Length: 273
Length: 330
Image (cartoon, rainbow over all chains, first blue to last red; front, side, top):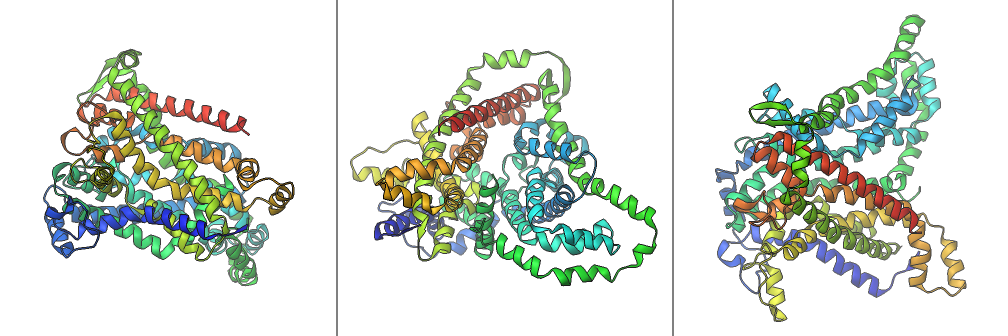
């Protein structure tokens, strides 16, 4: 590790300014009125129209923004809880339990990790039609309740974080396997599970193509609402920016609260790959 | 490895915790008397029960649709239902479809424009971060800000920044005498605008992946190189880059797969009526947008499924090529 020079700091500050600027600009425009947004030089300080823009946002009929926010919150929370639960459960089984076909099944999970979801989207839509789930929120929840990536991640984590002797000891004491999961495995997996949960929440919140395919504008997710804004009100920049800002705030809050874990998770994953 | 603030500390905690965790279950010693039959059923059956939820849901909503896509692609199939087996006719039509090849060209073009600068800049950023720095966490969070911006929001912000009349990019270009560019109008300009969004969003993320790999390089390698008189630049290319190759391969493959599925950014950039066709002349329509247009705007499920399989094929080919190149380039 070299000692850092002033030039390093300077370059890093520029890099971070560039990575933060679009977010800052998002905030500035959301607080302005439409007649100054296109000015040159651009208005670089926030104005006083934020609440006005937000109230216009929630009353913009074609976007259904409030409903989109609520729907996305519900879907993201349910998917996150389910993915964490099923991934830790299966990850534990793959890492610490002996059963016939274990390696074969693990291989299936590895292979499916790389397959893009979009590939099967047309039959998936047909299934939703059969179930009568188009335009229903469960259409964007149920197919995502499990994740191959999550199972694999938790398996890797459990290998290291759950000591074999602990599982053995609990077994000898007469614990059922599920009880071992609950009292021994889950506490040990908690840091890894937290990272998985954070990433699942963010990616569910950001899901775009599938909601656009299966939902309707009257019952959207938040990203769907944003796309409605950008097709129906695309000349109204302050309105769109207010929407983009409100849709980003939950992710920013998650990031501010768990930034350290998220960074740890990304750097962990790299080591494994 | 020790670099992660998460693992080591928490694993230590778990180990310290051991006596407490181990005694707690011991209180529940009643099941022991329940006989060995039930506990054998538990030991044999539980693993399957634990992995079952994943496989059931995945089979229904993941694997089945995937395979069924192939079946649908061999049929004339629209919103009215299956109108009969047509063999490879959809694929035949697809090979002669200029709109499809246009979308392939757009996707690959934007993939290159988005991936190459993204990974190079990430590499530079990572080597800057791989030094003794003050405010390390803050710096790392700073470079990661773009990835926590909601993806459609990224599209909206950059669409405005690249707007012909109101956009900041044209304003800045005007300072050096460039006449305003209509970024949506041409292939090259719209590709640049869209790739900028992708680059912006992912550079920081990739740089953290590289940083993690760089931190596990033994320091004496650099010391030996310095003794031998190798310059910093030389050290970077001859030590750092080869040593983090697994991370490089990982990021190249992941960003290729993601790039081939590019959808949200160009769709939002399109605005208004021409959103799904990627501009009035399909200047920036990607293959995913084309599949979406065929399946969910024209309701041509058979044809859309053929497009889906072609995307899959392209991704596989590109991933394999990438893998071979990155493996050979030492």
